[in-house]
Length: 148
Ligand SMILES: [Cu+2]
Image 1 (tube, rainbow, N blue to C red):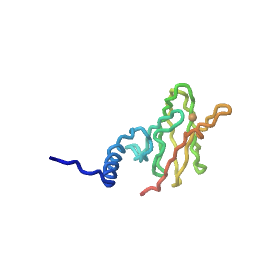
Image 2: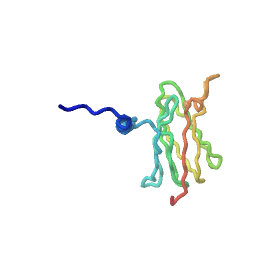
Image 3: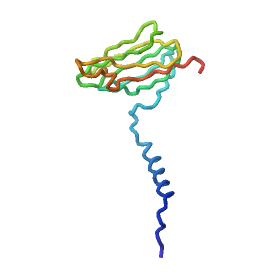
Image 4: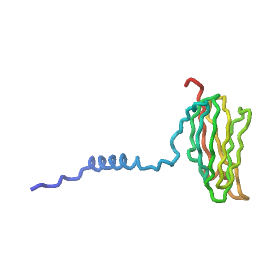
């Protein structure tokens, strides 16, 4: 006759670990928490697509190379809410502040020459409500020196 083993604390720990490992892979691919590393295309432009929604950017963390042009395709998936993208980078020669109407897509090109970490956000705000940035529409762009 087979007797069941007694349950010991280490068994509970082991099962907990297995459950964690199994379910950690179940995070949706569009969660946007991962760093998206841009590589220049054949024409030397670093490209990425970002989905704008109320109130998020997906993805919201980009890593790019300094002094290589960037082209972002911005798609606003909100039904009614206009959004925008403002990049907080005083060193940029041409500041980025692009409006994207509800349901529309816009592409924007820019150049970040100074390595560092920059914030981008949506500064839309309706009346006395919190701004979209305060609601979470914020992301960052890491700019690495060339030859990283
Ligand atoms: Cu917005």
